[in-house]
Image 1 (cartoon, one colour):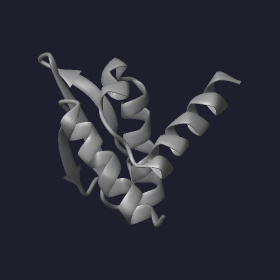
Image 2 (tube, rainbow, N blue to C red):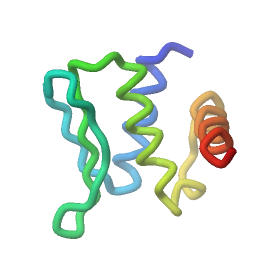
Image 3 (tube, rainbow, N blue to C red):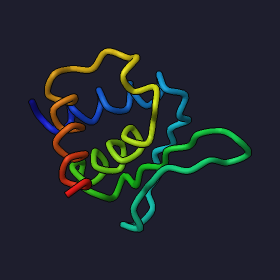
Length: 89
């Protein structure tokens, strides 16, 4: 599956989990996720490659306890599991 498709699916999952997604040009500063006044926010830097943007979304998804409650494409689920295992090692 192409990175653009995975990114789109990951963003959809993030929105279903309650993230407010902002996509902005940040001159390569990078994105990430945080809480602002109790609301989950996910900021993507559009100047970064899609692979980096996808990694930012995956980091946000891994932080969510409700992730198991939403359906995910097999390729996206595999990426989440693989990156979780890498971080645990």
